[in-house]
Length: 191
Ligand code: DGI
Ligand code: FE
Ligand code: FE
Image 1 (cartoon, rainbow, N blue to C red):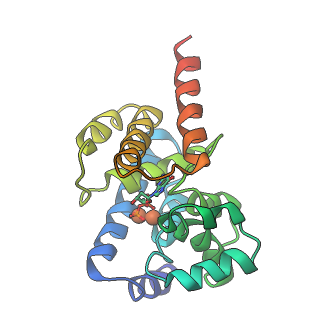
Image 2: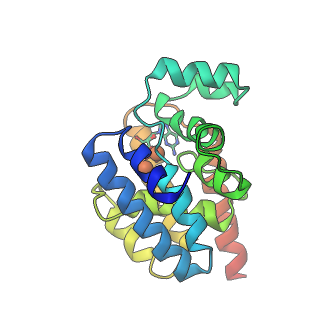
Image 3: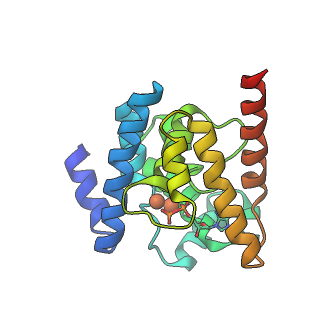
């Protein structure tokens, strides 16, 4: 499947405003990849597919998590997390993506994880800061992203964690690990 066919197929699976978001993530991922020395083409590919499963019915995502041996722990946390690992599976199975780094950038774009690659950080950060995003703290994220992926992504996870705490929701352990790991990386870089 070529790039245009992939774009048409993804676009057909979501409402117009979500497609605008995906286009924003594509542009921002490419820009960040160039700024921080990652591969713009792989960043764009991950961005095109990152929310492919976002509007799939919950039951369909749940079934895939159970049947395809994705981490079963996901089933105990917010359903908003599910589209990322399911999206990675769909990218490989239905869109023929074989590049493991691209698949991981899709898989971890919501939760993050310990030891995120630069590509994973870029797609996750672009998802937070693309131009159509508006939420408290987004401007701080955009400002930090001018010089540091890690500082910007840390601000992103802080905003999500704060939001989850305010809503009285549980935090997926990978997100806590991802945040701790970014702080460690920033401290090590300072020393
Ligand atoms: O799919 P998007 O809306 O573009 O953004 P996303 O993939 O980052 O999804 C974010 C949603 O996931 C947001 O509404 C918060 C929710 N969420 C629920 N529990 C967690 C979580 N996000 C993270 N990072 N960690 C959680 O534990
Ligand atoms: Fe997403
Ligand atoms: Fe997204």
